[in-house]
Length: 108
Image 1: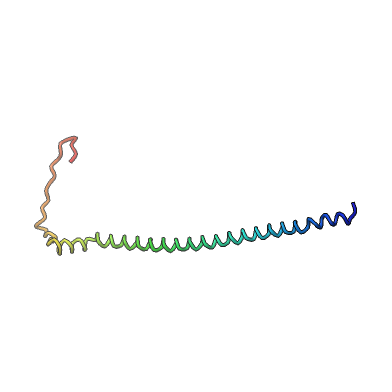
Image 2 (image 1 turned 120 degrees about the vertical axis):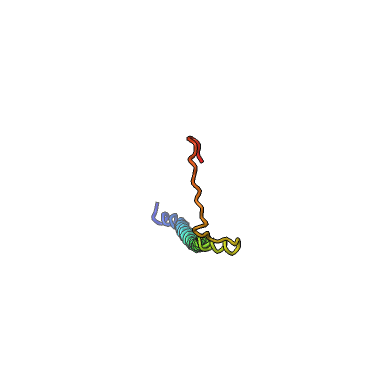
């Protein structure tokens, strides 16, 4: 075979090979672009969830503080006095009742 004939054969295949490589390059670049875009979207979602978690944690802390405030002795004494007309007993008003020993084997 002459060099001229070989050149024609390879010359016919050359543009197809180049087009194939170009298509492969474009596909890989498209994939990288899609992956990067997806990563940015996921990072935005993650940041939004972190902000939401921070708000929920702040609400939880505020709720715990409110519960502690509502359970405080001073608040309970104030509510008992204002709403129920109760007061703390004086020392002479406190009566201690002795416990009787329970029979053996019977729990109180």
